[in-house]
Length: 95
Image (tube, rainbow, N blue to C red; front, side):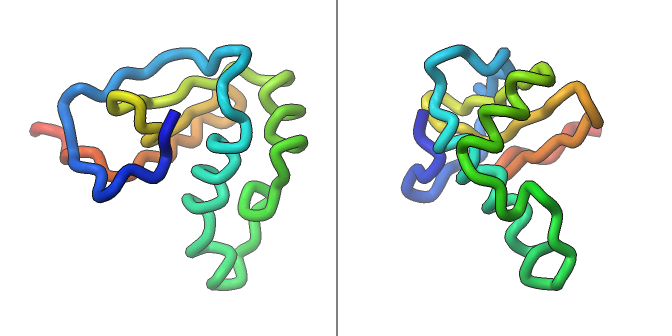
């Protein structure tokens, strides 16, 4: 899994799948922290903005997690506990 591709380009090949055992908890944690960084910088600190890989692993054990993959690039995640979706660099939805 790669979360830092050189200039990720929007793609229609994004696939959503269940987070698998053996997946990189560290990369998932980096994606989550990056997604919440603007909130933290503005003083709206959510737990996710500073959680550790161990915290991510613990949360994965409690909820179903799906990841959005653009090829090998991790571009988003969703969990079933609160239906929060974090997506970056995806094309706009066709109306």
